[in-house]
Length: 236
Image (cartoon, rainbow, N blue to C red):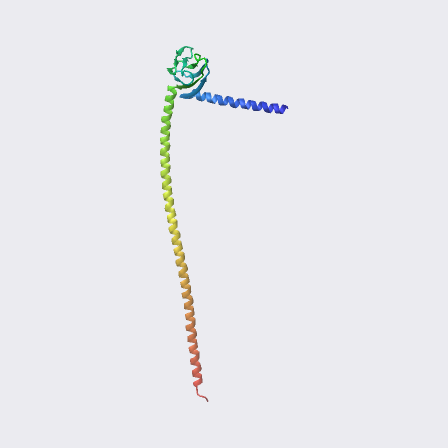
């Protein structure tokens, strides 16, 4: 039982650790991004008010808009409060509304949608929020320009490598052509030597046979002449 409890505690701690890492990573990404854009579909109950909070960096720009998609008379209240709690965009019962501001001090803006005037009708709202940081955007643009330079250098390097590869392929093709030519020359020389060797062997055999025949004929003729002389000699 103690081991099971220890394993369960370890799994729980691991899950919490992973969850915290994911949340921190998403938070860091949201805070360090040069711009964010979020589009929501929100359901507002009758007689209710919902507020949503968005952080804006100092010097950043926030833009938000609201559109009533369906429900009741097709209108809702829309208001925005800055981080100091001041209403910078007062309530107005409209079908759509928007607000934009450059935040000098930064902080969390409250974006509220009000449906309190509708006692029986729910509303489906489209809420759009975007933030923009000019400083990070300029840095991002500079990084892109630097990246373009690196990409151009990399492209030039690729072109140089490609040209060298083409030269190597040409040299390999020439080497293969020389190798094929030398191989054919070797085959031709081999055939020439083979046929000439056979011809010389045939000539040598023919010469030897001819010599033997001639010698045997000469020796045969000499033997016959001696026999005739001895037969014609006078008897005593």
